[in-house]
Length: 242
Image (cartoon, rainbow, N blue to C red):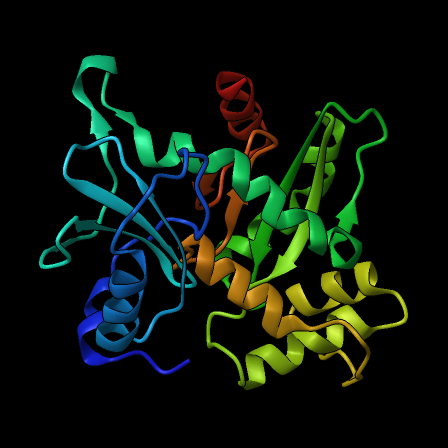
């Protein structure tokens, strides 16, 4: 979908995922609001719900979460925080659970580096060319030794279509994808191949999650952590989130 200039400014920020755990509400002007947002921003609206702020609806779209006034005249984009709960990110808290539901249809296509004594499972949106993605991959044994299973989904930073995306498609379609991933992240060339796995859908899922850099880690409770963390640091992050 081609974004309008107005919405391009919105998605340049970190956006939230496209689903929410907030309860649905009776929106009398729902159809009109959906149409206005679609016409103005070029987004598909899946649901309009109540938000933690009186007077605002939470709008779930294929490009993230937006907040709009009930009369549809004003729009807000960003995370909501509760100052009475230590600056708790209410948007993240509401969206962590549904994020896991969004991952489920992709589990069959994930490249999984399983820990022998598995204690935790994380999902990493990765790019074969990014330096910190390579650093994370080179420490895979360290994560596994700590009981952390790492599951990969593709997020080619150059977008789709691109040579970057083609390279990742080749990895996923290789006879031995795990070996091919290691080769690609070591700078090797993986022979082009095609299969039924759709890298585009993985990339679009990452966009819906608001990913704007790799690696991006989704913890087992649905919390999203941007950027590389060493095995020991990641284990502390996971344990703190439980």
